[in-house]
Length: 270
Image (tube, rainbow, N blue to C red; front, side):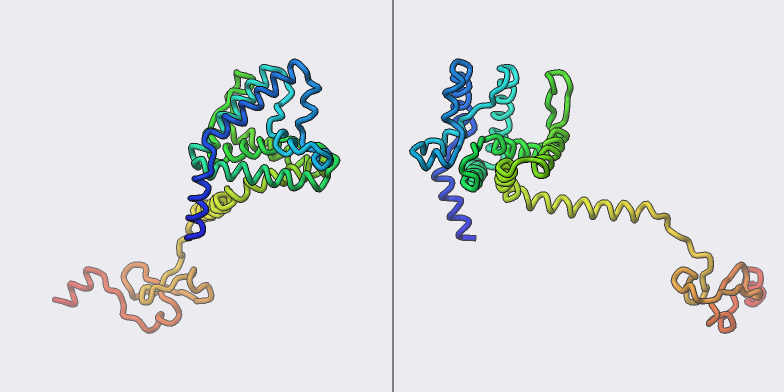
């Protein structure tokens, strides 16, 4: 506990507030450069071989690599990145959010050196922010194509399907980058996911129990309360000398006190 407390204090001391805005600012700047001179952005992706041959800035510059898409969609992507990143920072606090991004960054750089000649991009780091936001705020609605309201949990489901496709059909660099981006997601949300799965299973079991109709006993011993449900092997009979319909198990059929009716009871007292 003391170690964790010291770690949180250290993180709080070095944490960068509004980190999402800082990353977004350099990406928007890089996007502007791409609109004017696209070739200049070739120096941004992380290529470990080039890093080892005198281009160390690539260890950080790949974070600034923007989405190379139409300005309208780029604006929408930048807006979502800021919205989701800021929401995570407000929910977790700057230290924890910084650590989330740092783990994703370190894991991505680490697996990049396993395929040193292949370029590595920041796409999966951004995807981990999206998945974390979708887990914490599943009912948040986005306007798809600016018209159709869609809950973000369904878009996250599509992302997981895409991850599965990359895992099965993608190249090894893509697979490694994807798995690296999931490391921070699992470290931060794995416990919540496990607890929710356990609670969901418990809820399903309780629902199943409630859905099964309760069976009523057809025979019940008037003396001991034994029924054909509790003791299906037992034989039950009814006593003709008892008032009403009184059933007995074979143990008490001939060894019980007869139940008297109201009229018979009055005569006995008279």
